Length: 74
Image (cartoon, rainbow, N blue to C red):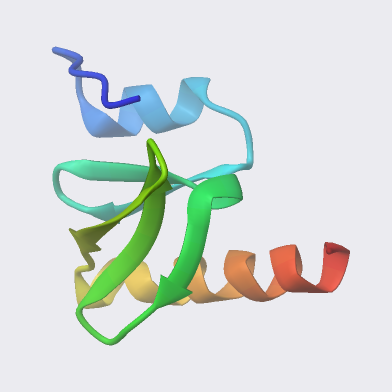
């Protein structure tokens, strides 16, 4: 689901496991739900639908690395 939290993003991401990646100032995604990565957004499944979440350039490197690792595990 989509959750709202009133805390610093760095604190939230520190409490989550390795399946979660920060992709934007206001977004963290679950790598188990990532279906595709484009240059400006990531496609994530939510409720059977594909949702596009924006990616900031400074967060894209970690996202791509974890996506490749996920593909290797599948």
